[in-house]
Length: 263
Figure 1 (tube, rainbow, N blue to C red):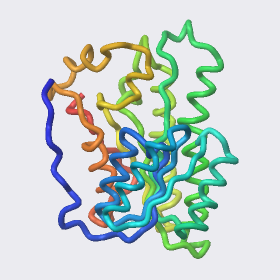
Figure 2: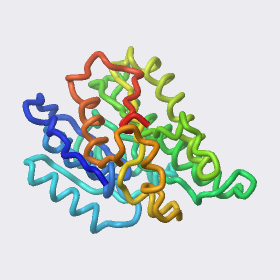
Figure 3: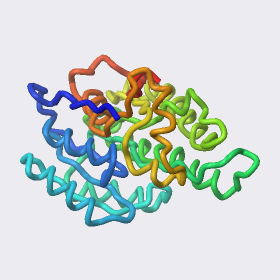
């Protein structure tokens, strides 16, 4: 399988000196985002739901870049956990100025006729309700009309929102379609508050989410449909996210960056 070595876009990037929350930050795209954001000067909160050891390792790596980093356990499908996450960041780091809504699940693979209400509900709660509530809490702190400093929100969507994922993950694709619409509307709503909202749409990326899907060899089976003829790395998605967080994208709002090799 062909691979690429991502260019380090943090070289020469203006230090942000902001405070960033990355949901689902202990692995995959989230962990790669924490690493690159720390290199760009962000203090970071690594949210995780189960694997404390991985989260602590990611945070330790961030601290080696000379920034502050904490971990906060919390299920982003729970409003109570979300409120506790933001309160902890308020107390230990300060006012959040960056949010990456990354936590998400595919749910079990299957056709619509075989889906259960529980599967659809769990996917929609974590993938849609969670980002809504996280963005709400971030906006309450960032909004200039409330005395905030402004900030940046980046939603992690998926190319599935446009492709539909038939026969496997229509429920997941629909949840990411909701995130795309959310990104468009929220970018317009929050721009006057000094808050930029954008999204990335990853394609076939080498992360643990595919193992959890229950479809062995899924990446290898689908890579033939990628014009670049390879899968992507979490770091390649993270580079797009960190660019959207930076001042280099200061006039970018309501935008989507497909990181999918042309798929």
